[in-house]
Image (cartoon, rainbow over all chains, first blue to last red; front, side):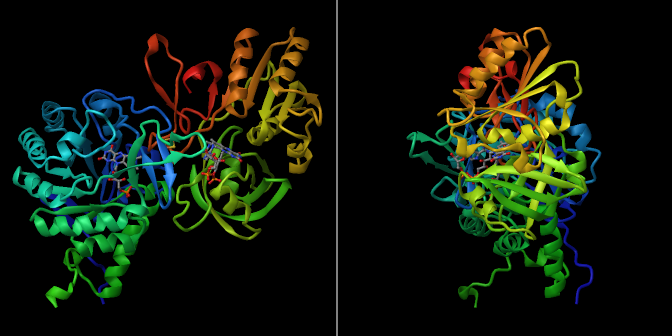
Length: 310
Length: 262
Ligand SMILES: Cc1cc2nc3c(=O)[nH]c(=O)nc-3n(C[C@H](O)[C@H](O)[C@H](O)COP(=O)(O)OP(=O)(O)OC[C@H]3O[C@@H](n4cnc5c(N)ncnc54)[C@H](O)[C@@H]3O)c2cc1C
Ligand SMILES: Cc1cc2nc3c(=O)[nH]c(=O)nc-3n(C[C@H](O)[C@H](O)[C@H](O)COP(=O)(O)O)c2cc1C
Ligand code: FES
């Protein structure tokens, strides 16, 4: 019987007290959830994607619910790097949890500038690079779908930062392992898998798309099996740690991802459904370890037993 | 602002398709202001999975909160099947409500359809004497009587089909009443469907009467975190900018919204 399991995880040089983070764009800048639970208990907070200049985002409607999930076309609305450093980071730094900044550029140069801007900035533990958001016309789509461009973005960010670099992959490709390998080769320290799946919804009465942007990114429980398989494939294709994302609602879901190969997880849409989801997942993972006699959560990562292995 | 499981005290149909939900939450009741809303998780499953926003329609002694809602789809249908004793996860109170600190003005409360829900709470909270409450409905069988939700307040009714009260739109009735009250300092607080709010925008400008309106959009978080709930703000120089209804609102000054591009 394990009384006090070690649920800390190591992502390259980034140590987290537990494997549960909030996914970018679903937890604002943290403060929005301040009164709902003790944010210090989180493994890390990944903030909303940040660009060089503030962005206003897409015309409404920006969200629509679909069976067991939702489509969003926020269009990466954000306050820009200056606003983040001035208005958001000082408060985040009063917390005792890791802060991961998610960045998003329109060109390789912009990715480089963003990475440089966080160089030496205290209280930012890692950079997560969004090369996969499907919402903005000239956006990350171009980079994230092409292994070579993804590699170049990664290289640029790695060159311009002193922090661990996590690259977040898009699932909207035919073979995610090609991207994963290209990004690993370019120097990424970890991968986040997956971003949203592109989709749409139509109002049959008005015959209009339900989103102002026509298409949007699907997230929530509906995408979990797809995300899980992509995490499994990716974790087998690369040596760097993989962070599992997609439809995680509870500890059971999170553990599935970890057994399939994820070293840690991010929780997105679930924050809207149950704002305390992350905390319940952290507790659930601890309880699972106790129940199963697991001393270190690290031991279950990629522990999937398949017929081939016997 | 809290997230908590509450116990349903009652959930009754007060007029076809309209339900009054009452639950006990002293924390929420103490904090709630008219115009604020809550996000309700209607089931523990994943379809629907997102919470549904509802205005707080009133509070009672001993920490009871009231919600008045119309069944329009899957989520509200599930909610309407809840019984006394069932548990419900609620998050709130959220957003900025109506400012009720200014007693100097004669207040016109204008409601359209189920938009009356937050206005019951408003009328409960303001000085009764200086209020004219106008409510518009399509037909007489859709009328929500304040007495049915335990509120003592005279209401002037307008119906689209003339089956009760003033025959016509509530905004036309409002204009008549405004003319009668010309010599008084007047303000309008309103909640209702988009065409009603647009009509109010013209009236507010025509008579130069300050007007506050409560807005509705799709919401995922209700907390200002997802940026999903935006409306175009009225701003100079064709500069596009947005308000977040859940955080900057749901109550706005009518001149803050770009009614032509909504
Ligand atoms: C701040 C705020 C306060 C509200 N207060 C009340 C209230 O006090 N009483 C009440 O009955 N309703 C209120 N609403 C509207 C209510 O949230 C929706 O009617 C409800 O979410 C519909 O859920 P559903 O699953 O039944 O409908 P769905 O199956 O999701 O949709 C059915 C229909 O309702 C429309 N709808 C869905 N969600 C919304 C929404 N968020 N806003 C407007 N229309 C929507 C859809 O376009 C569709 O036509 C409020 C909305 C907001 C944003
Ligand atoms: C409203 C919303 C906004 C998002 N914004 C971002 C973003 O700015 N940057 C990013 O990398 N991912 C963004 N995402 C994707 C999530 O971080 C996550 O990868 C995805 O939603 C899948 O996880 P989930 O099913 O747990 O939500 C957003 C998702 C949602 C629902
Ligand atoms: S509903 Fe999420 S920001 Fe308003």
